[in-house]
Length: 202
Length: 332
Ligand SMILES: Cc1cc2nc3c(=O)[nH]c(=O)nc-3n(C[C@H](O)[C@H](O)[C@H](O)COP(=O)(O)OP(=O)(O)OC[C@H]3O[C@@H](n4cnc5c(N)ncnc54)[C@H](O)[C@@H]3O)c2cc1C
Ligand code: SF4
Ligand code: FES
Ligand code: FES
Image (cartoon, rainbow over the protein chains, first blue to last red):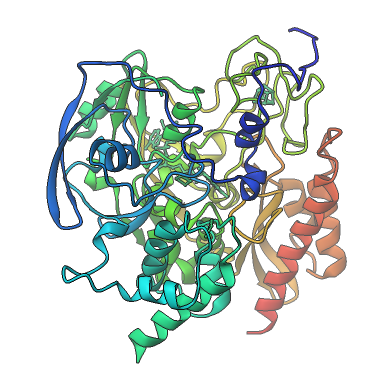
């Protein structure tokens, strides 16, 4: 066993890499999109044809097994409404509904969603263009600043109410904890959810 | 992420066979697997997706036992009113873990087999990690940061902490794990599933190549109904435990008839505090005995420079969980 102490400053151990390794600092992780995305895929013949129903439309695509659902949405289909923040299940920017449940599309392999149904932020407004009530509530309550986390927040917020976890503000905060907002729009996000919940009950 | 072949078997027999091949690994919810593949810690040649085995998705709360299929999702089990009533600590251990999105994807089988969050294990820029690369050394013990490492059950080769929450309830309440492997089916006491690191920290469980966890069962005992999972963490929600305790108590008048204590955030494997349980059994449960049980639970702890805080914190968590349960019983 080597007795050489690890040199924390040696090149190759980036601060970012270290932060990613340590789960307890997840909250301080920024939303540095793209930085940690997989290096450009080398060409391979091992692709698979999959079919996923996305926002009500059946879509066929050819993906590698390692393609994540968010990569399939953004890169293969050009649907960039779904965002990539941490790319590690920690921030919720990539939240979509898969078969009715909110999941992190950065930790979902596209091949594993084969035959499933996905809802992204692009699928929320109705065909005439009217916003989903949660989208309107976010706008009304200023529930965002830069907007980067917003698509994920909105899908998560819709699921939070559907799951029955929007009983009071403390419960909403607990059940929205998988969506980080670097701009700190949390109070307004909670307010938007309360408004939609109340209007649905009324 | 390195590319890999992908297969989604439709039968348990096919899955076992596929998973037993060299270079194959099982994927269920994928929240550990995809994460570790992305950061280069794991690079399977073949991923065997077991989510096509629909028979393993259910769970049931019976009068004698609780049964959970390996593919039951964390969120579904945590929210089931029957589970909340029969065994509150188990529901709490599930909903206090990870995030709603992760809990919708993650399965109970994958949960118990999740890998350590040791930052050096997770960062391949560090050459030293006996768990990732047997014989390479341990960056944590060799001058690294040890604030999130085990103070119970560690070895000179590895002090990685078992990070999960759910497993504490299983180890304390005598759960069993059903498996199907190349050699057929078997039942493993949960307490024997995980192995202490010793000289071989890369071998984490007794599971054989290709062996698939199919179900988890728990005998229903009175202490379950009066149980609580207390989790101390750096943030209010969505963080791994700094120290946690799953406790359950059965009283006979003023005397403790049965008590269970599982510890998390502090040990190399899901940990049962048997000496602390023994100290409480047959005596009263009050502030003094609860604190003493907390102290005993950490009597054999070996704190490292960065993790010494876990000893008093862990003792407080044990005492706090016991007193919460006691106050609930008192309120009946
Ligand atoms: C950001 C983040 C925060 C988290 N916070 C917490 C937390 O606070 N508390 C907590 O407890 N957990 C936490 N987790 C861990 C999470 O709970 C686990 O990743 C999840 O439970 C694993 O389940 P899965 O189905 O996704 O497993 P997978 O990723 O599919 O598999 C995990 C492991 O189990 C093996 N496996 C899976 N199913 C079987 C089976 N049936 N038989 C044999 N082997 C199998 C796989 O080969 C793999 O080694 C967190 C994870 C992330 C990403
Ligand atoms: S504690 Fe274990 S997992 Fe962490 S660096 Fe040391 S050997 Fe690796
Ligand atoms: S991008 Fe952060 S959770 Fe998926
Ligand atoms: S991250 Fe900017 S609005 Fe949430």
